[in-house]
Length: 514
Image (cartoon, rainbow, N blue to C red; front, side, top):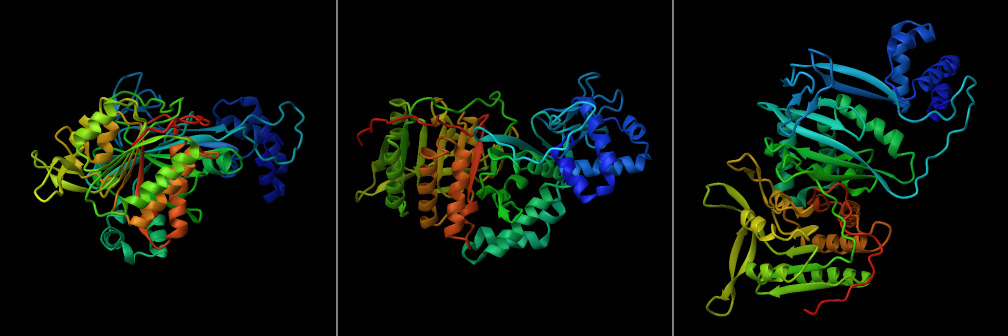
């Protein structure tokens, strides 16, 4: 056979051996061109219905990739989606919304045939091998398509766009809403079976129809059989759908696992409709510099988390500077100006407050420059807008970690239609990667997350790879605290082209004096 998966088809359906061999030969002749059903039917000498069934077998086994693209009804040219989620034809330049366009279905062979020529040779199935980790980006875009309706589009590099709709009726239904309320407001009463059930519901609602077919095909053919292949599910929820962005997608559950806890299926969130230009590579070629900020008076177990971070950085020979005690926002500004720094880690409180524009904004608690009467440090709640202005000038920042409540929460949209929240604000400030908490997190889980995150980020096979490090840190939290939402609380916003925030083997770094 030309394709190793064809052996699987023949093993399941021995009577198809001759037809599969002929089909393989035809695919080899196409040399990557789209499959045309008409000539295939003539070649096989079968009815079109049988040909369709055989094609379905090839798609299921991963030999063929099905591509369903929206097409212009005027010239049947494939349509491309712009940043507003509207499809446009490059030929006639007309724009189309849901229901106004046609579809173009094509099939392509997923791989080069094992051997071309008139005499096919049956070869045993072999596992693919890769020299190093290789991530396949599976982009999922969610956009509002009307009241209570949302479109879902999925695409991998070089593929067409698969389309479906979000099952909002289930996600907005009474049963899921009640579980979500318990997750948000009663974190200590939510057990693992409930978390799994919620994760399955989220997966089934997001990956449906052709989007699910595309996902399963990519995973079964390109990811699962390959030793060094990994899937990065990049979830891009349009800024016209904050109610969808507020859902805990980090609970996605499939194939017996929470996807966000596995490096084979890392999960990141992205906001691609930004005006700051295309995503840029995030890697820093030299040893990163880390700034740890711990304002006084939080009442949190900050000492344990700081010890865990410092120990991991020391193990890797990466230096840090610690701002602890009364920390005003001006202290952070002065320290960043004296940098450069590549990682900023904030440990403290966050909350949602109404600002002067009448909207709810995420805010971080810093200290006032002057102590209050009695010696206590005062509070200065810094909004997402001020934080964006604070960090905007420092392009050296590759990663910001916010161990603060509501750090990842999307509170709504501003007058320009953009997401409001600390995480989105930092992306708009130009930070390529942000790790923030979408719910309050227990101190012991926060310490465990930070400890594993920095160890995986600074040493071992995943050093420098923030998306893999976050997945492994989530995994450690789940293993130790399975009956807690804690593992799904950290959200990774990733705007870079990949998850590398600094190169491996960065060497030692002279520690800064505190």
